[in-house]
Length: 354
Ligand code: NAD
Image (cartoon, rainbow, N blue to C red):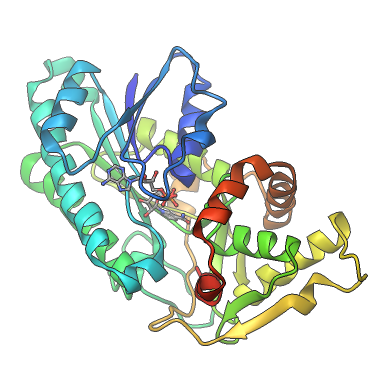
C-alpha cells in the first residue's frame, strides 16, 4: 500500500511514519510544510529506508498535492497536518483557519480528483483518513460521563472549532461526492518527540532547569492521556480496516487533572534526576491565571474501536510517562535546539496547558 501521511514531521505524524515504515509492504510518503512544529530530526531513524520519502509541500497547494498523489500512486491518505496548539489559536487564529479548514478543503479536492481517476479496483480500496481531536465535542462535567461517536459537536477554542469544521468537511465529501473516508477523534497524546511547548515536555524540561512549572488556574482541568505510539497503532488499524464513513474515538482510559500530571512528572524526576538541594521538584509548581474558555474535562468512550477493531492501549499512564521522562533525559540533542529557539521567559506562564 502506498500511503500519504500529511503532517508527518509533527509529533503524532512522525510516530505514525516510524510505525508504518517498519512494515516493508508499506510505502510511506510524508508531506509536510515544516512549520515551526515540523522537525525532520524526529524521522532520522527511518529517513534512509527505501520505503520512506519526505516531500516538503503545503496541503493548501492543491495542484502540487494532486500531482504527488498521481506520481506516487497513493492508495491511502492519513491526514494529520494542522495547526495544533490551543494557546497559539487564541493569540492568532488565522493560521488555524488557513491550514485546518482551507487546507483540509484543498486536500479533499485533491483526493477526490485522484480517486475519480483511479482504475476501478484501486478506487475501491482507496481511503481518506482524517485525524481529529476529542476537543471538537466541547467539555464535560466533573462526573463519569464521556464522549462517544454520536456526541454533538460543541467546540470551545479557535483550534477545536477549526478541527470541527474540518471533520464536517470530510463527512460532507463522503456524503455528497462518495469519497471513501474514515475519521478518528483522539484524546491528548504524550510521548517522545513532543514539541517542548506542550504540557508534559514543558514541565520535564523546566524542572530539569529548575524553572517554575506553570499550571493554569487551580490545575483541576481533566484530560485523558494516550501514549503516542498507541495512537499510531490505532491510526494504522483504522486506516486499514475501519468502516467507510465511520468515525472512531481513541483514548487512553487515563483521566488525570493537570496538577496530578505535573506532580507525577515531578515524582518521576525526583527518582531519576534528584535536585541538588534535595527538595522535591513539586516545589517548583506555580499556578498562573487561567486560559480564557478553558474546557473543564474531556473523556472518551472507546468501546467502538475496541469492539470493532480490537484496539486497546498497551501503555498505562504510569508506564508511558516513565518512558517519556527517560526519553527527554536521554535525548537532549533533539529538544535543546527547539527549546532554545522558542523560549523567552515571558512566554513561560502561557505554555503549560493542554
Ligand atoms: P504537530 O503540531 O506536532 O504537527 C503538525 C504538523 O503539520 C507539523 O509537522 C507541521 O509542519 C505540519 N503542517 C502544518 N501546517 C501544514 C500545512 N499547511 N501543510 C503541510 N503540513 C503542515 O501536531 P500533532 O500534535 O502531531 O497533531 C497531529 C494531528 O493530530 C492534528 O491534526 C491534531 O489536530 C490531531 N490530534 C492531536 C492530538 C495531540 O494530543 N497532539 C490529539 C488528538 C488529535
